[in-house]
Image (cartoon, rainbow, N blue to C red; front, side):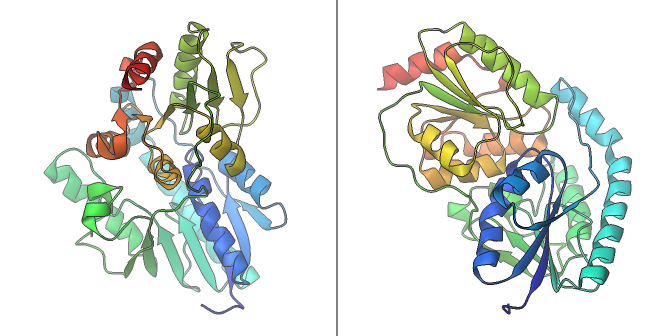
Length: 338
């Protein structure tokens, strides 16, 4: 890669995970003297603007993926959103091609955006899901074929995981896809965070919210209700969206969107971390060296349900289903373990 590269870096807005894990890659490219322009939408775009205020930004079309209030409903709702998502991908591809023509980008990087590639410039697709897990062998094979068709439109695929199966954080998700025809490069886990140093605990638990609505808000409501009923404990809640509610329990310290320094400091001062079972959050826990964590798969989200099964008990992490979440029981168990 030459110093004179001009890069269009496109990031999927699916919670903040794609934006936060792209941050170290973007900083690496900038440190190597590359010119980087960023493209995204929604909260991911807001986050990237805060982290890289001096860069050029483009607003991309939104996929507007939403979940249902139940796991079964989410599967149906995702299926109904497939056709609009394909139309968004087509608009995204036309916009990427036009930007490459106008701005003469030498390379395109896409973290999770299916249509962010160009026929004019080498294009890299970043994903930990070479083989999406649908729940049975027939649908797993079908999902692998469908995702390979998307990935084969790019010049190369980068996987943020370890190449060695025994070290893998993503399990079967990141293992080789037999239908891929383009080169695959394992680049290791990505995180904007570093290993935390032990500090005196200020919070009994810190919860990190992420992902599409309405499940993000449903979990926030559940957590705040339980936190308010436990005034003997102190909590930290990272909402993952802009702004703070006017009213919240006195024993809860709130963040809207936390930068890496704030998040890392809060994590170091928390006896327990509670977060979604999304892959970016898992990479963050791994980078910080945190073992006392509870992972909550998003209901109906196949990737997170698989990761929950795969990661149960690994690195000391505990996996709990959202409808079974009981903060008091978790905190009592933590005290008993100490």
